[in-house]
Image (tube, one colour):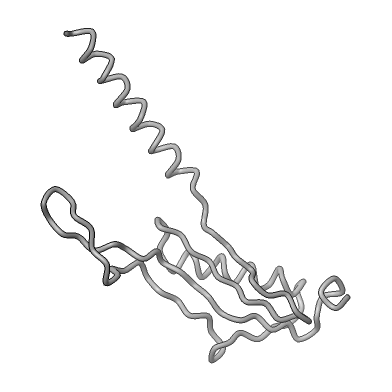
Length: 121
């Protein structure tokens, strides 16, 4: 019996380490869903990062997409920034109801003032 519980303990530790490593290695998800004549729809999301960090990534992606030239952002000159929050959906955890969380995200339209050569062809 001691051997069985010892093996379970080792399996539990291994699973915990695997989970910790996968969380550390998880990266924000950056999506560019439109690439027409220097106009891009860009979104960045991550279950573990605050929206302020995602905004920095979003702005870097916008600058990179426009190859260093000037660009505009819609709507209203800034991307939409949403912090991690509860959704309307719930899940049961240990006989208690908890909301399903929606990841923090940043999204908006990037319009390059001068389309990069690769985008105009």
